Amino acid sequence: MVTDIKYSDVIRLGFKVEKSNDKIYFNDYGFEYEIITFELNKYSCIDWAKESRKCEILKCNKEGDVLERIDIPNLSELEKIIEIYNIIKI
Image (cartoon, rainbow, N blue to C red):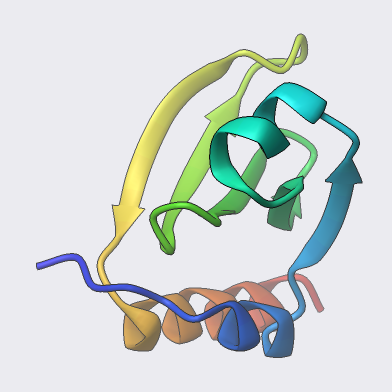
C-alpha cells in the first residue's frame, strides 16, 4: 500500500526543490509548481509529487524522457533506498 510522505521528510532526506513560475498551474492549484527530487545518478532520481505526496523512482534516457517509474510505498522504504544509495555512492 502506498502512503503519503510529508514534505518535511523529503527535505530532511536531502531532496532539492526547483521552483517554477507557472501562473496557469498556480491558478489551478493555488500554489507554485515545484519539482522536488533526490538525484541518484545522471539518469535516475526520486521524484516527490507535491499534489499526491507520493514518491517514485524515475529512470530517464539522456534526453530526459521517463523510461520507467517505480512507486515507493512509504517513508520507511524511501529512507532505506536513500540509505543504500548513500552507502553505494561513497
